[in-house]
Amino acid sequence: MTEKNIVNGVNINQLFGTINQIEETPSLARFIFRAGNRWIDGGHNRTTIKGFYGAGQEDSSRQASFVIDNDEPAILLGQDKAANPTEFVLHALAGCLTTSLVYHAAAQGIEIEEVETQFEGDLDLRGFLGLSDGVRNGYENIRVTFKITADAPEEKLRELCQLAQKRSPVFDIISNPVPISIQVETK
Amino acid sequence: MTEKNIVNGVNINQLFGTINQIEETPSLARFIFRAGNRWIDGGHNRTTIKGFYGAGQEDSSRQASFVIDNDEPAILLGQDKAANPTEFVLHALAGCLTTSLVYHAAAQGIEIEEVETQFEGDLDLRGFLGLSDGVRNGYENIRVTFKITADAPEEKLRELCQLAQKRSPVFDIISNPVPISIQVETK
Image (cartoon, rainbow over all chains, first blue to last red; front, side, top):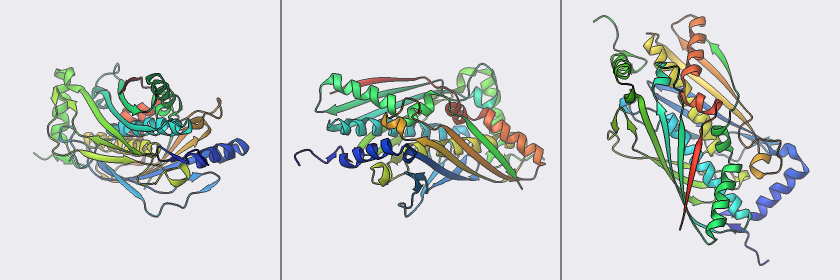
């Protein structure tokens, strides 16, 4: 075998194997991700993430949960014990665009050296506070800067950035509407 | 003073002080949150969050950065060193809905005892892999269950959950479109 099996840390044989399996059995593509959260105090709360459903079964590969806190900085009346939820949105978008780029580059055999991204989101607190109907609650805009170093022509790297946007799940979640249904149980 | 100054861990005087200041000077409501991310290997990358702009100035209250990783589980070709980006979306939504509920309850003088939430998101991998034009890349649906315990009538708690949805920045970001602009720099 002359072709590399691992490109950008991604197992290419496994990647193409997954694609083939999903083409044969599309239901294997269905995933359900989950999170549970518990309020601690003020703006401080804690999320636990472990199990998910995917590839036709409940995943059991994770031995331990990921535990992640949210808080708010002092000016937003918190204790600043963690990043705030809107900052975690930028984190999720950053990770997803980068992984989308790296995986799709790997599928094309393009070796990436570095990917560095910067994110900024504009938020007007009048939305959250209910002080102005003309102001939305969430980000009005998100600006992203990608810096990529790779052994490929500049045009190819720009194409990869386009592909990352076109394929990234979190890019889609943020730039298009996702229906959210909420049930309430009270004690 | 007979009224409590701290409700649900939220300083009510500071909250109403903030509202008054923003009503007088709406530009104080403008915030810019930021995140920087660097690819490590495969689906593993690392976000650094520290500075932000808000209330008319660059915030300098944070002494250290928050460092948060993304990764993917084995079945998604990662090393499972952290939750994945779509799971972080649920974390951000959980934190924001909870904080929105707790802060708005505090503003109304309602003491919350417990808030526990569960999140599920449906994702079809054919979107990310580009295997089907009829499948979106991101979550098709997100389901949320809220459990609240508080010294208030059930109807009031249901109203608070509605208010949390109506005011939460991350609920807005996910359920409505946010424009994302991307610049690419290559070396």
